[in-house]
Length: 374
Length: 95
Image 1 (spheres, rainbow over the protein chains, first blue to last red):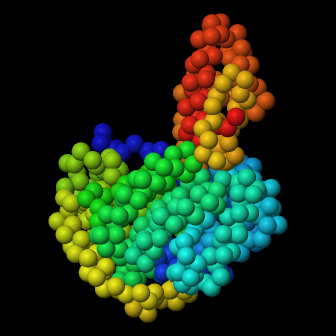
Image 2 (cartoon, chains in turn green, cyan):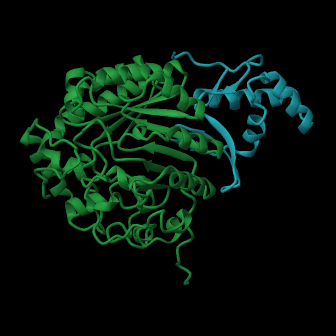
Image 3 (cartoon, each protein chain N blue to C red):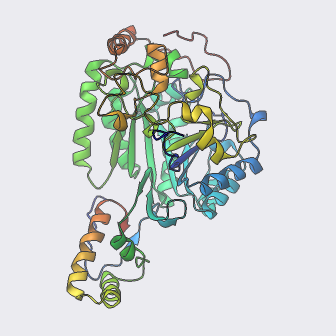
């Protein structure tokens, strides 16, 4: 190898396991792929246990148990117990509508460290309409109370878009009232399902101006009570976010069937082949898989990234967004104002926002009816 | 809720629920692991945090360190309090 050969990658900090794509909710911005995996293809308990052991051995610290809805897996207790026993920090990412107190207690007993609960809005009618699940919001609130009653740390995840952004102040109050320690104000990311729903989800620039002010004021008011994590929505940003902390730098994602991805949306990129844990050891995939090495580091970068002082800050931004908006995953993320496609991103957002649709194309086990071509 | 936790000599610090202090073989390094966050304490902090067990008071922790490192107790105590207060403010410790 020559002197410029990249150093071997550091161990990953976090691994997200999509234990299943089954979910009672139908949120129209779901991060799962449009082609959902059916239950018969899911990894078995034994296979997941082996994945967890390999992850810890290679240095993974945070284990995020997600889906779909991870609690539909009956072996969740077994997986958490094993993860905790080998020293993985376990985070359950849940919709919170399926667990009763007895099962939550079993998960805590197994060693669960932290719960992340999604809320779709502050007002029940709107929340249930977004989730496509009548009665869901009330169940979530009851679940949050169970979590804090067991003294388990709680994060509320609030995915924000045009139809619920005006409820953010109420959602912040709700998070505090529920006893959450953290709130993630997560703007919808436009891949997969969300692309098919852009006209119903894209906020207007006026809403976003209010958003930053709301978050700043709440952070000041709630210092020491509630930590608020907030990322400016890409479509109105001037600089890209360091998506996943950089491609294949800190994080890996395992799908229900065992495919290992650098991010949950990576399968939208054509031409990348993803190895599975059924065929290759996890550490070997992390170090050597072609898909992980394709955009790792800075050598792959085009201009203006290649000579940019921020190339090891934002790592070129998001590959999936470069593909979705600029048409090529190897280009600069158009969220960057130095990208020649930046204006297009902004005008797409304004057009989608002005479309003012309210009906959703819900996440279900089928292709979306009106898959939008960007 | 919302009250600042004050670390005084008599306080008994402990890691908050959801926070883990552990040695990581892969990195050969002690880590403080919290929801969505990992931090790597320096060597001094590691020596103090190893003594945080939910039973020993700050004063007792300072006694142990003063003896072990043959340093003036008052100096050690003020350093330990400053360090633990910082971690309490960051949500890592309760007392």
